Each structure stands twice: as structure tokens, then as C-alpha cells.
Image (cartoon, rainbow, N blue to C red; front, side):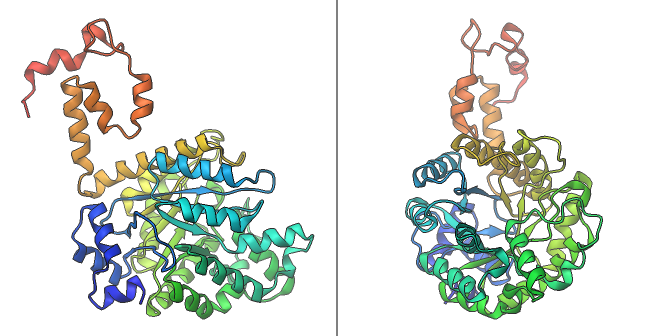
Length: 426
């Protein structure tokens, strides 16, 4: 049985207990959330890892780090360095988006070394192999696509992105539209190319029951990809995006009926004043399914700083109810990220998630801020560092004044030190 199936039968699994403990919630509470489809616990039957976590309502906002090779930079060792950097920064999940080198070997290495859930986009390998052989994408073999999907699930992948909402009908919404960027979804654009040339329906949509058969067999969580997501703020919340979201809600219901866990992927570029509305729409149209966002980025003009842009959008989205933030690195839109880019991206996304968790009232969130503030009041620098999100970075910047008590920002005019006699001791 799947985690969803057992939750519906009133069974609290060992994975649910571990995930509940990690989030500071009662296992029975988590079981109910999973049973209702408002939370997912990605855990492939064939993947043993240390830290199973749940994603969804009333839980800490989780963070994913995308890693993976490209045709221009393919190395198992480098991807394991990125994995280590992501884990050191505190990621809750990694996705292997490799399109270069030995894809299976990279995936195997990540699965073996990762103590957290691992996701993939199976169609990437199909497209990569076609490109290597000089075969056009529109000649993709549908049977091979499903074979690849099952192979990756059998290998132990915990959740997969499948772009089932890219249909012939939704394609009409971007053909001849005013969109600046018709598609920035790699998986979505591959399917669009195949569909337009062959004049056939998306095989992942047309054969969705087969997708569900495979996902159920291995208890793989489906991440329903948003192939129509806006790739610039000027394209946000248009008809193509919303029509796809409506369809994803319908597919999510079908998945849950088959006891397959499901979450919904959301847009990557959204103006600040539309972020909350996007979250509300997803929750309404998809019956509260966990919402997984790339960023989102509320402006397009910050290449090199897009991890900051994404943290701004991510904090607003998560505070509004989004559950899972895919990090964005400083290299976004520019290059394949380095291990340091990965680290910076995870930290930025974790800042966003924690800021949102304070708003959500997640257990332990505001308490951590209280603890670090008491340490600041007492000028207890080791205490401050112990509660810092990135203690290493904080320690590198710490510089004490001549009194060895205050920092060099204010020295003898330190407001904290001067006002400390007025503080109520705790």
C-alpha cells in the first residue's frame, strides 16, 4: 500500500512518525493531512533514506535544491559536491535534473548519498538521448517515455515531475498570444514540440492512468508540472497558465482516487501583487494539494542576484500558503550553478521559508527568533551563532570592538548594551 492508502485506512506508518517528529506535530495530525491530500510524504518503496519529510498544510515550509549535469558540464563528482553543498545548507530535498554525462550513474550516486528525498523529470533523459543521437525531439517514442518513467521509479526516485497539463487545448492559449516567452519549462517545451509536429495529444495526459499505475506501484509522489508557467512577470497569471492549473486540479483528484500522492507545481515569475492570488487559486482549484513553487521571482532584472529575488517572492508565497519552495541560485538564467551557488540558493530559500513559517504559526518558528534575540540582548555571541541559519557565514563577519563585548558597528554606543538595564530578564 502507498502512504496515502495507509493514511486513509487510519494507519500511521513509521515514515509518518519520523516526519511528524521532524515537524513537531502529532503523528495522527499528519496522517489526517495525508489522507485528505493536503500533505504528501514522498518515499519510494525502493529508496531507503534517513530523513523522510512531509510537505503540506500546517507544516514547516520545505526547500528543494535542483542539481544535475548539462551537456557542457557533466561529472558525477561535481554533482555529489553540489549535493553536499545543498545538504550543508539545510535542504529538505534535491532534484536531479541532469542532461549530460552518464545520467543513470549520476542518479544512482545521488540516490545512494542523499539522506533526503530525491526527485527527477524522467522526460529529460529521453530528450538527452535523442539529442545525442541527432534525432529530432518530435520523434520521441511514447513507449520509451513510459519505460523510462518506470525505470526511474523502480530505481528509487521519490517524486517525479510530469507535465500532464500541457494539452492540445492549452497549447492553443499560447499560439498567437501576446506571451513574450511562450515556454520556459524544459519538460513542457519538449512535449509541445512533439505535440505540434505529430498533431497528437500529450501522451502523459492521454495515458494518465498508466502514469498512475507506475506511481502507485512504487509509491512515487507525482509533482504535476506547470509547462505553461510564466517565464517573465509580464506573462504572469494569463489564460494559458490558469487553464493548465484547472486541468492539474482535475488530474490531482484522479491521482488521489488511485491512492497516489500528488502536489502541484506553480509559476516561477509573478509580480508581488499577484503572488497571493496564485496561491489561493491553486489551493481552491486543487482541493488544498501541496503547492510547489520555483521562487517565485517578482522581477526579471536581477541576473546574478535571482536567489534574493526568489527569496522575496518565496516568502510572500509561503506566507500565503505555499508549501514547498524550489530554490533559485545566483546563476539562474546565466549558467549551470556551482556548489557555492547551490549553497547560497538553499540558504536564501530557507530564509524565505522561515520568515513565512513565523506568519503561519508553525511550531518552533517564532521561538527560534526569540532565542536569538535574547542572546543578542545579552551580547552572547556564541549563542547568536548557535541560532543563526548559517553560523559559518555569521562567524566570518563577526568583529568585536575593543571591549570584546560589543561589535564594531556601534562599539561603546551600542543601543543593545545601553538599554539592557531596562530589559525584563528571562
